[in-house]
Image (tube, rainbow, N blue to C red; front, side):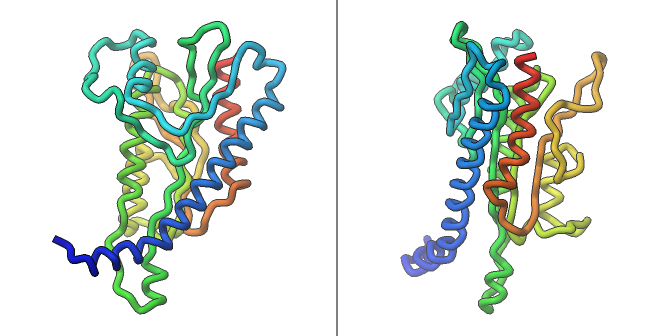
Length: 239
């Protein structure tokens, strides 16, 4: 069992990282709000009878219902319907005034900070094991991919930053190899909205927009990418 002094040291060690994560969380929330305002201005004439709704979390019930209403499968594990996933930047839904069951995901966003070893090295401290932000990302992405498996698009965006994501990355980067596999071996730092490389005779792949680098992402940078993904999704569902 960890001693109280060890616990205090552990909390102190994570305090700067937590502050940075909170700053990034606020920036991506603001970027998502900017995205809604942009879409409302850009697509105003086509949004009559529709709404753009922001939500901070998704329940398993919502994710399963997205699959259920498609009619493509009938078997589900319903033991955890009230459990939720909480994408760091939340989600934007398209809903309908005339149909309470109409809900389409327009964009899901995440921001992940991982890596403190450069700071620790500068302070003369030993390296730490690389963190688990990527594992948390993978869990959420799995749920979103499942919920959108019957749709032709996967409007999911993640912004990763920190020294664990330094670029240019190469074959020796342990963390970036995880990210590459999570993106089904498609290139990173590119925007993907629609599924790729499939046909009516075989399954499609579902690459998503994975943007990773060492320096922190700004609100404006995230907004520039989010609005492209969100507008592409919105145009698909409206037109």
